[in-house]
Length: 440
Figure 1 (cartoon, rainbow, N blue to C red):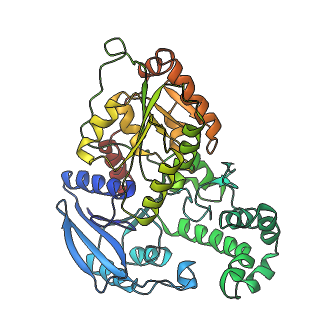
Figure 2 (cartoon, rainbow, N blue to C red):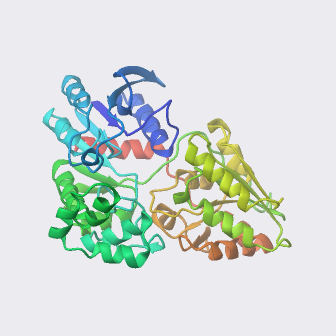
């Protein structure tokens, strides 16, 4: 099969979980003798370009930046997206697999790929689940797991609160009738965004229906996400779960009978320095723990954007003077298995719905238990109290309590969990499942 993987960003510009997932999937599909190409927009580029990454051809097409309001909201085609439409017609793929819905790769591009004769598969890696959650986290008011149902006034208020309005003001603005909101959306600047939010939610709900009507299969990473998409009107026959898997060589370390956990317990965080990853909750939890609680906490992540560097600095200020915690740059990919195996516990305090994170599955592959939040993939990967610990998302006090409990009783927590960690799913499993999806 000729298979195109369409993604919002790609190597070497960006090193994130979705990009690594796509690269690993492409590698395995090539091993199975499929013809694979990658396509991704490149905001602000002067011209289209082609290059190879890890032996896979990559086509990057330029799109305009900054976007107009209509382009950013998906109400108008993005300047430059015609590059994709011309390219996909010439490429004549059997399958186009969309991994992100971003400017330059949205419904117009999905339809163009369909018109080129391709079977369309879309996998949503983000908490928005397509266009269902405007906030992008599936956390109601940023605090608790949402019911997952898109509703104009409820979702408008939640997104406006994320954008900085007080909850009462967001609720009032979100209650504007949709017909009135459509008029308010014509106003310039923040006022137009605020008044127009209910109508924007209605527009996104229509986009979700259009997306599901166009794709041949819509792939989710968790059961909860799949259920939410169906409850929002998708046909169950189009919705499929294909859970995350890991690539690379991971060897499980000796069990607790051979290598018991000793104090101080070594915790670790390995991921992006991004608020949606719960790093500020982690900082608050660590800062709250009395100095006589013995532990070590190693915090690592890439410093590849200005936002990540800002979060890194803020986290450093939160933990300043606490010698139990250290911050550092990303762990090289080749060293990740050994690094995870060196930890006693991996902490994944995610503050949004995500399919993984993949690093939690990698930790399991090395025999390291995980403390995570009760949301998304973590809630389906970890059995609380059996092979790890789950705490409510955004609840730094509960996270601090879990860390203190583990630090004071590693034998009754960490070592008990290590004996029950399940086998890790692999990217070979993921690729095999996708081939079946592509063919049917």
